Image (cartoon, rainbow, N blue to C red; front, side, top):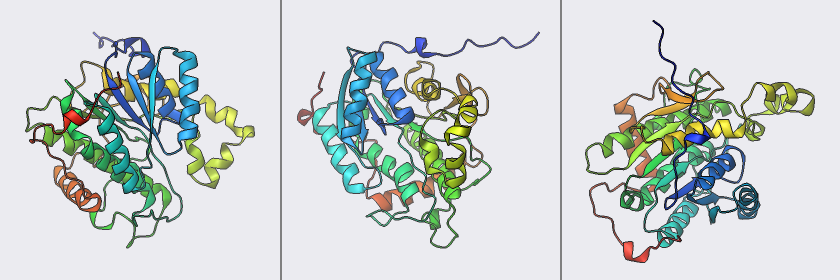
Length: 327
């Protein structure tokens, strides 16, 4: 007898999220917009954490068109700048006594060497170090929620580009810089971070779990970051063909949303499309190289050193009197 086919997980499977607070980074474009809409349409109070607040306000208005009852708020966040991460985290702590969902969605890919004002390589600063710091700074608000989740968006497309993270050369100071290698390293770092976060949570009484998601290849403007060849193929003469091979933004957001809200999810799980690039969200194996506890622990220590943020899993949730829910 063949295997019993599992039902497809769709937006109709999202449970009622009224009373839950969800922070979505990079919610002003692409998959972040679709993720924010799906969560808001299901009742969550969604915070659009974005670098460009004017653009985020337009997105909020567009979400309200499709979900008139949506509860939305904004916070300015530039993940490439540690001062901005700290400021955004403080604003969120001041507004909310608990955060139920932290969706680490924002990402970038820089094709030429570029440094942030903290003197970090820009791609890993945005994709990994910014989210590492944000998660640590919001940890007590996540622990204060009944059953919170951290979901980090990674990628399955570059597994063969780089199968390790060079903790001693995160910023490509001793290696030739290649944009796709930097991107692949940053996304592998995301997986190592989530796996290590879950391992550390496993030794506590916390109900917080950490998961990750690969959106596959979806229609968005992200390919504009990926160099002249990809940008050329994204021109109107070719775009219609390549878009036909992609899935819609909503389908691309479903792995993230399932990782965030499906009651059956367990810590450390990885969700992605059924196919390599497209399909409904299913449990997937992480990228090769992401299951190395020793490497993950070294990256964690390095990330703490670079950001100055330490995770306190065993301390009681502090300063809750200062926070309040906007609900």
